[in-house]
Image (cartoon, rainbow, N blue to C red; front, side):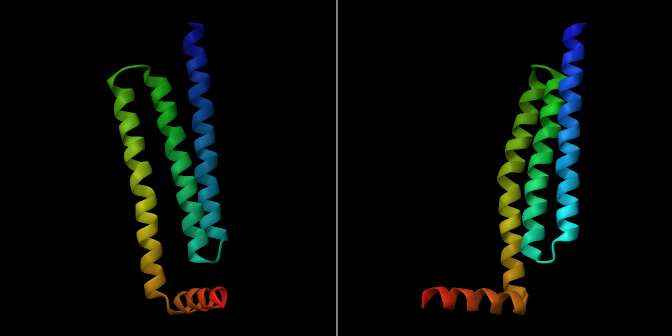
Length: 112
């Protein structure tokens, strides 16, 4: 009986941490003005939030095949989230002329 309460408490703490991470990501995406900063805040908060939600589900499920599936889901999301963020930043770099000029000017200034 006590073990179930401990598992419930750990699950609840993980869910609260995940909510804090997701809230920080939303606030960061809302408050930052530069699109790259917004993507960074969203990517970090999303990754941390997904990890803690999956960890809470793993603790609640116990050992078994469900836990293995959740580990695989987390690994998949950890590999695809940075790749998609990188792709979106590349699209923004090539589409936004102000960003392209700003980065190009910064790169030329650092070479000299």
